Each structure stands twice: as C-alpha cells, then as structure tokens.
Image (cartoon, rainbow, N blue to C red; front, side, top):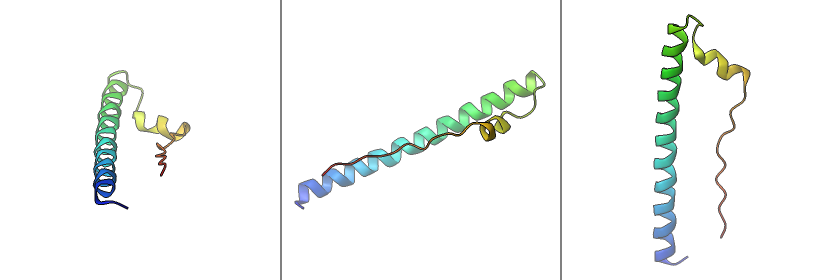
Length: 64
C-alpha cells in the first residue's frame, strides 16, 4: 500500500471515529432531553423506552 493511501485510510478512520463520537454525544443529549420531558409529563424515565425497541448500530462498509 502506498504511503499516500495509508495516510488517506488513517484520515478516513479518524473522521469515522470523530463522527461516532459526535453521534454518541448527540444521542446522549437527546436521551437527556427525553428524560427531562418525561419527568415534566410525569411519565417516568425515557431510557426504558430504548429497551423496547432495538437500535441498530451503524455499519461501516469499506471497499478496496
């Protein structure tokens, strides 16, 4: 593999990692907002709703 391709792959992996970190932070913020709203409506914690529905993890597909 050429050095340029290795650097490109490393940069792509870094971008993917950062995107996953941002996604996780946003998911936590949405969960927190849902919990605040659920408490305000006296519905209980919203994190129990995630147990009822499955959330698919993102799949990263690479081609060489």
